[in-house]
Length: 610
Image 1: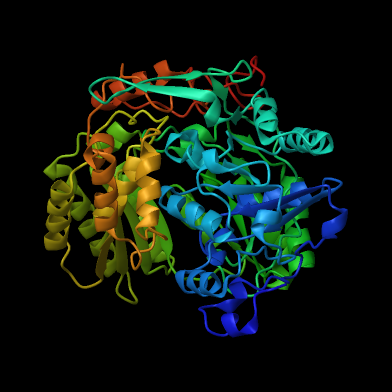
Image 2 (image 1 turned 90 degrees about the vertical axis):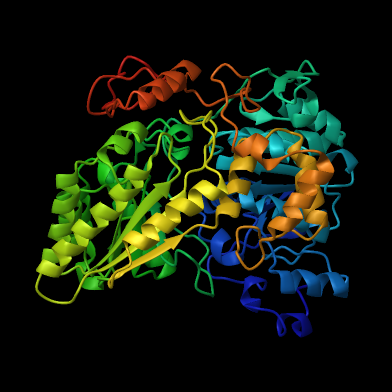
């Protein structure tokens, strides 16, 4: 039974919970051998914009006998309403309670959604702690970028899928089917999946800590469990989804999306995604064009986004855009290109897009000084940046958005002043251009040290340090036409804690959820005092995890997760950062010996195969 009207009529955006969208897949519940609920633990609008969830939904529903349905975190008003009414959390497709599914899979892409996972389990009448579940409860699975350090969520998840799941899913489904046919226990299933590559079952490992509180080791307690969990990498991108579910309401990315490539070889030292999605794999142009046609035909979209970590690095991207314009120009199709690097060619490329919408251009210099750009390995000559801005203004673009990070390793006050100097130069260029005055938006994010990056050992700035840097920029950029915004420092602190945390954080997450923490990534719901109380009761301190400089020789809670990148490479990159030395893109120059095994024909490591 779906949610009753008397509830839906009284909550925000009721269409979040009704289902029935175009292209949603509804199968006969009673004929399905395996029933899986898929979730991105945030609002419908955010979850439906997650491209990975759509891929999993498509692959699983393509398996015979498998039923995959969706569910997202209910907004607090809806959560309260169904709890008062005694109604469990329901899936979108068939309105079945989540506790009737065999498996529930969560995609963890942001650390501040962790408490939402607990709340969804609670609303589904499923024990929140993995150790309290029995054979009558669904198996709880998690994947996504955050599980490259799975330890903070290990108390709640039965097993993690580490890396890219597309090629692993059919094998998992076969395993699930055999388990159900034998009517075996959940413990037997967990031991069986632990033998599969890329699967981490936290209950099969023992964690030790040193007397001073530092992490010591994590060791298997069962023969089936591997000491090292290797991240799974698909050798070739699977076919793009061309019949995705079309939402009834506007979502964050309200357009068709095509992943044109995966991975990035530019080597920005702060970037977690640049490590955990290596190697670079590009989708053939013919496949992209076919996907564009499919999205238009099957979904009615008038805009498609060509998605990649670095879209302008796609081979002959200008030719691809020109081909799309030639094929679909008469249909008034708009094309968006996120993640373009700063260059005059990027401006020309955007200017050539069919049905372009001049809402503004976005670029991410990240650092305001050339010195700090060398530290983070994202070097953009100032002349190139200014020439890019000038080209944008000359072509009629008046709105520019620039992303910068504060708190980067080795950052000084002069580096902060460098942001102001750079923005003022760009603003002056805009004023010289005939037409409207330039409008420049500056978005300041806080550097968060992430696992598996060269900066995984670095201490995060304190709130006092960050506030001081904000004040400098507010004073220096107080001018008409420049708007400054920044991230809440306390949410960044919590993100850093969860990014570099160990298994002891499970107690903190659990207690914070009990005290009312949900939707921590939303400013109107984030309550830092709740988290402070949870840390205090657990006998832990946020600073220990986020603001402590770590030795490169210190054992790390995520050390048992093998991304394919050699730890020696990360240490070398950290040393080069401190020496302000650049590491070139290995697709343009010699191999940097990061340890990843490439199979792309344009890679320097042609002799190595996955």
